[in-house]
Amino acid sequence: MSRAPAAADTMRGSNGSHGGFRLRQRGRQAAGAAPSSVIRAGSVPDTPTSREASVTSDKKTADQTFRTGYLIHDVSRLRRNVYDKAMKPRGLTRAQWVLLTNIARHGEDGEVQTKLAEYLDLGKGTVGTLIDRLEARGLVTRRADPSDRRVNRVVMTPAGKEIHTYMMDVGRDLEREIFRGVPAEKQRELADLLSRIKSNLIDMGALAGSSVGD
Picture 1 (tube, rainbow, N blue to C red):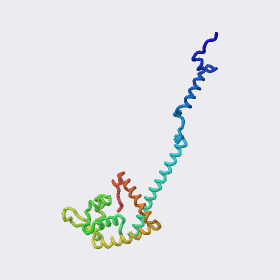
Picture 2: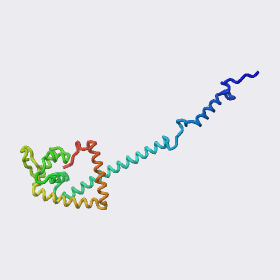
Picture 3: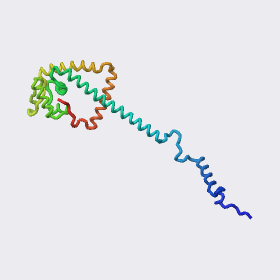
């Protein structure tokens, strides 16, 4: 008399394995939620190829940033050379030109040395040397501050005003030539971008310890 098959027997295949159970389990997986290893629609698999593409993209962006930074540096250097060459007949350096321009902005009242040092991001001693050189040429003079006799204000002399006017005329001609072929709209966009970069550099502490050659 044959016996009823045991429950375990119904789960075994002809080779004694749990083949029937595995088949039913696969069926439930097919009807239910997809296993975690299945890539869902719209998702991007994190494959070696995708990671390599991301690294390549990042490298291209970094290379472009370096190139842009180099161009900014190179343009600044060449522009400085052009200005130095233009002012050489007058015996002025770029730093002296910048100092005179900052003094001129304050009109007849001039400015105190400590403030000028802040504007130029230079030490007071360095600015003092620049002022000495300009004063020796009769372009600026020191006057006691009416509100504090211990403080000197640096003001331009008539000779300093004359050379500053000449400098501004030369500067306008130079800038017109430097930006030849660049529309005004593009110049404004460039100024906005450079202002953003400058702000980033200031946030990074770039002002500390920087200097301008004399």
